[in-house]
Figure (cartoon, rainbow, N blue to C red):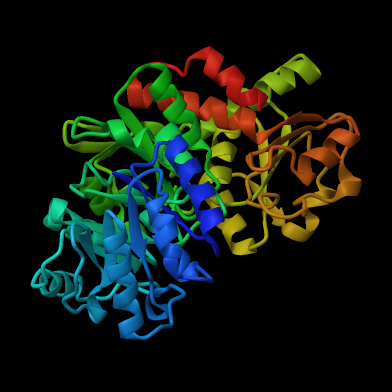
Length: 481
């Protein structure tokens, strides 16, 4: 059951939003009456409801706007029940017996700041009060918090809905029914959230198709920190839908690599894309890795096979293929003997540098932290230079393997050092046209953007996940956006 949580200052706006929620596929709406300027309008609002409603007056202590007395609170809840509210929300800490007629009661507890240690104890105490559903919503700040909230939802099953607020809780909002919860909460649209981390009803229904997720649904995801920018869910969920597969792809934030196996197991993930900053740190946690992963020391794909997690790298071949094609277009030959400058020394930079060296490229590493550049050059047996000298080596190929350009207008390469005969590759794909690429293109350099690279490596990941490539029509459609 999808409940769209609404906030407005007057009944007219609430009714307009309720109609939009109905058309969007909501099962019910939450009227956040604590936002109403004139709470006398609550009666009119409920009587005119176009679909079932839950009435909530969330207190300031639990992240809402209601500052009234206990008498005012229960008077409004009883009014809502008598007017025909289908559900009413009562905060556990303020609960007292009241007349709610035929309205079902949600007994709720919110901690908008943290995930307390005593979740199970709190749940047990809440069970002592008669209600139709227990709702626990806490702010989750990392994988350890997430795992505790997930465990509680699995334990409580349909007697509760347990919500992990914040980006770490997105998977629970999507998988609520699979995990045993009766209800998930969504916003009407992006920007209209009533709690941090809410997805829009459009995302839940159209992108994730939550109504058809069941115990047989195969789950995949992108694991890293951050993952909010990732377009992998958008792409792979289109692939699964196009191929009529009962599968979903999720965003799984992971702050500490030591929790990787526990998170993967708890969510029963069949495959994952691994992104920054864990591409190097997770190599040792896998049961088995491809020989090339062992050589380069970087993994970006892991697949469950008969109870074992096996690791691969698709960044390296995806990038090399893209740069090789650009070299043929520009020079009519491959990369052998070409002078390559790789900016960065993280997982993506390492994988691409290793692949280009395998092609015969003469690689030099430049990184803001000199020690990291030295370490990578030692591992790969290539050259390195201080970051300040990156514009003085006159490379034929320049690779941006850093996050520079993902936010803001900064470029990791000096604007006055671009040359027409260069090939320029950017691993950043959001935005597609970074300042790095735009400045190179202005002088006539051959550019390879991050979306093209993303699609190539994702296609290789798809082969590991499903044993087949991404349909070409989807690749073309995705690349054209």
